Length: 150
Image (cartoon, rainbow, N blue to C red; front, side):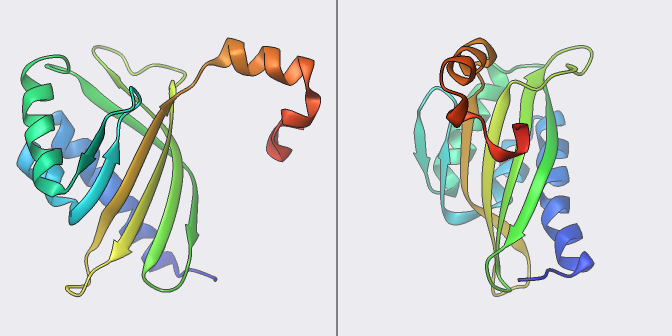
């Protein structure tokens, strides 16, 4: 499906709002960007289910492990599956001080346009990259190299 420039901008603006809410350490604003029944998988493998679970966990994270951090996000691709579903692949990371040159996590967002016309995140999955392991596996088994890397 060919997406309109307006829809692409609407979807990517949700991710920009996510970064802004993170910078304010505003768990409620962060959670508002997710659907009520959203799923959220962290890079350590924790699964949060529902907006309230996402808000509660981020309220804790913003005052403990991720206190004072900022969020870096880079969109790699946006694909639409019908007029009301978008899948976004990107890279991201949390940081303090200067933004890192290489972002260490690969992320997948599934966004849906809701009845009120707003796009919200229905599913998020975050995976930590292992560049050394990736490099070794690609050298030993070249067939594992993604088409974009060949």
